[in-house]
Each structure stands twice: as structure tokens, then as C-alpha cells.
Image: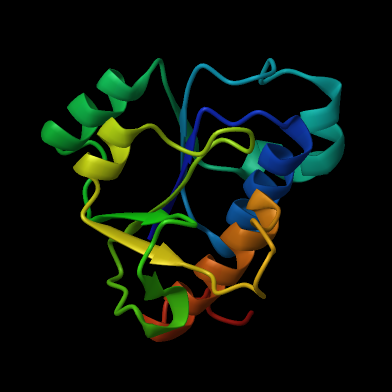
Length: 156
């Protein structure tokens, strides 16, 4: 299981996601450009001392991420979490090698990314509500995917 962040805008969300990923042993792919420097104080504040334990890979751009998938560096099925998804995230059948992709906070992902992914899932929301915070949506979806695939870390 992996998390993939497409051009994230908000360092606090990315820091929170990296902290969660470190705690759960899940690698993260960050597709740049980001709306902030990965050395920003806000990212470090949210990630705290967990950032050093986070396993993350930076991709210079979308093309670089696609190439990493082609050469096998980033294997697995690409599952986009999107408000345009048709399948509720709890009804989707996750696999242990899935890559859970989330778009930027301000604009999601472009059509070319929508066309490229293997699947699209959605978190059902109350009518009139647009979307959840990306870190919250990541936590919900990752939790369900880890539960389904029995992939949570072993208790110490």
C-alpha cells in the first residue's frame, strides 16, 4: 500500500500525512511541484519528529511519476480518491499493492490524471458539502484499505 499526493498545496496537510504514513509503515509519493518548500516550518511542525521515519519519494512532475510506474519503481494499481468518483471508498475492493492518490487541495487532479488512473473512489458526503480535508480523507481511505487487506502493522 502507498499514498500518492499530487501537487499538494498545504504543508500542514502533507506533514500530517507523512506522520501518519510513518506510523503505519506506508510509503508516500509526492508529485511536484508543491505549493510550498518541503523544508517549510509548517510541514515540519505538522510532521514533528516523525518526518525522519517517513518513507517518501519526490517526483519532479507527473511525467516522472508515470515513468516510475513504467519502470516498476512505483508498482501497483493507482486508485484516485475524488469527488468525481462513483464507487464509495468502503465498497471498493483494495489490494495490498494499491497506490491511494489524492489531488491538490485547491484543484484536485487534471483530466489527464483522471484518464490515467485504474480506479476512482469517493467518500460520500452530505448534500451541499464539497469535500473533506485531504489529510482526513487520506486517513479514512487508508484505514479502510489497510483493514480490508489486513495490512496494519503488527502490535509490538
